[in-house]
Amino acid sequence: MSFLEPDAGQNHTEWKFGTWTFYANIPQEIKDLKVIENAKSIVDFAIPQRFGPHGTHYYSFVTREYVLNLILYFYKEYKRFPHGDICIVDNWYWKSLYSGGRVFQSRKRDRNYSAGDWIYLPTLREVKKNKRIINEK
Image 1 (cartoon, helix red, strand yellow):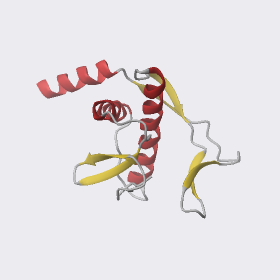
Image 2 (cartoon, helix red, strand yellow):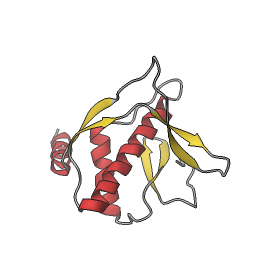
Image 3 (cartoon, helix red, strand yellow):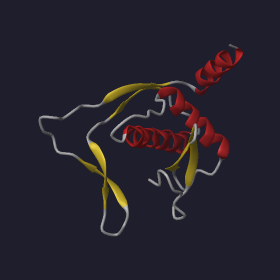
């Protein structure tokens, strides 16, 4: 994940939040900007970016980037956006490798184990309808 600086070796999308600009890594195969922007709008609706102390903005963004990639990989496979309930598993983290890369690494079960958080992914139609209602106010 590039986060605050774009990584020339990765396909990424720019995500603006007020004065902040974050960079989310996305699948190399996804080039259609309309698909990417629609997927981002679904994520924005489902899990808004959070800011706060102790790296809240980072952890919020990592989760959002993860869901964005779930949506894009689903779109690549099925040529449509997923919708419905999904579980964001809380037992994964980014592990840095000696080679400079990063991978998801599973945490072992312990007394702080959490099964995950359920969120609802709306349809793209629901997102657009909600934006229309907000813009009419």
